[in-house]
Length: 168
Image (tube, rainbow, N blue to C red; front, side, top):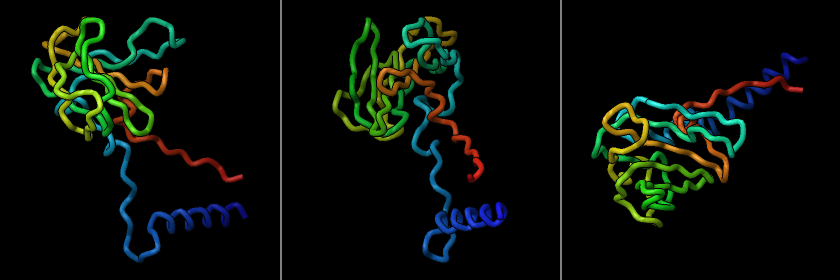
């Protein structure tokens, strides 16, 4: 009986993916097609995200990416510019995405203004030098938040791991 149930689930899943036509459907778009790197190419991570014991603990709430002064900084995903200006003496751009996520980029000389809609890959401004602890010419600090929770922005670029669980 369990084998019949698994076969039925697989047949139903196949029917849902292929749709009502006889033509074979393409697999759904992967997460990485919604998000992209905020610098051209695939930059090197010079400092990783710190998983912190509490939201008030000291630590690194984003990733630092190696770049060059003047490189375009790109919107990682579609959204609306929530802020473009100075924060604590550093030029920052943040983008609010429709799924409740907010990405931040610093130090970036803004080329956009608050309220402006951006698509994935749209230029937000240009990278400037001056990020503390950067081991190369310039580093982009890329952050990600959902409400008050900081997340590792690299998860946006990874295809999610799918696991099948037993059917009760």
